[in-house]
Length: 418
Image 1 (cartoon, rainbow, N blue to C red):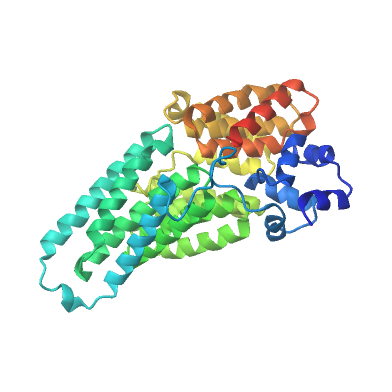
Image 2: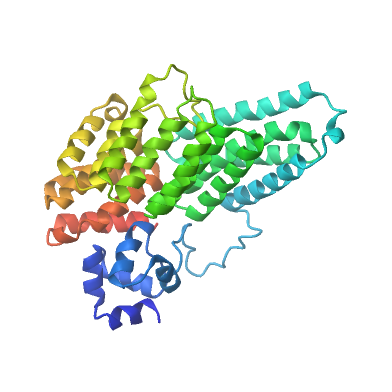
């Protein structure tokens, strides 16, 4: 049974199912012909309407499409041997971790002849370059522009790993775990969830080999984000519990444990547990008690500066609209968001404020914040803001009689299918 048959068996017309989901009827048609697949924020509600669990829904409509669709009539890409940057990054990572793991298994006496000083200098060069790449990533408004540089760094690391002895492997594992996380961030921002999860898994493995507990915990946190954005809150909570345990073995002067807590708050909010969510947020805010520097600006960037917007987003998840609006409005007035230094963060806050308007059936609030968020998503090509807008799209159903809201919804659909 396909989606169309399932829909008809349950008595839905395309228009009725589209209205229940807050999407256009033509979107349902594209799903039924498998031209496109439902995006992750829509899947839990679609599964509920079709009386399916998420695994059964995946079988019915296919996995979320991670990459941009092929143009009509173009031959399919060979994902095992294409020149696509995403695929190349993934294959380089897989090879690098395989080589690194083999080096760790080598007997120590095989590497005794080589000098530790040369090895240490080599790994430090990679780590310094990684720090630079994270800075470029943070500053880039279009995150995809960082791909070529990351690919070059991976190629260099991959070549260096060939033939290296075990004495150098631990430091190189740390550099690899760092790069895996950056590649995962790039994949995640591009809505390539499977690639992101694979990169974070490799990051955790490399970090474990390096015995770098904070790096390891951060990889687990980023892996949990994949579950959070697909609304698998219980699975995310499990990964974050592991991250919490690993972080306890790390450097207590770093903010790792507090970042874990801030992400745990999102998982608890998704599970509807207000008290646990607020306890986690309070724990995250203890980051201000640390004496800096307590983050490295690369794979660990948590300094508590986003907690106002995160608290607002958590209250929105829990349906506490007044508390959410107060926290989000405060966040929007912060210099870093008001001055446009972070388009992605501002876009996320604007989308949350638009969602509050949708839940209050206030079209003016939806349009006021939603249109600016849409402009920022277009300007940055950010998959992160696009995902937030997809969530807003599902809230617009009750306002479907307002032509302005319908037009906004169509623009969001267009953004998320290109």
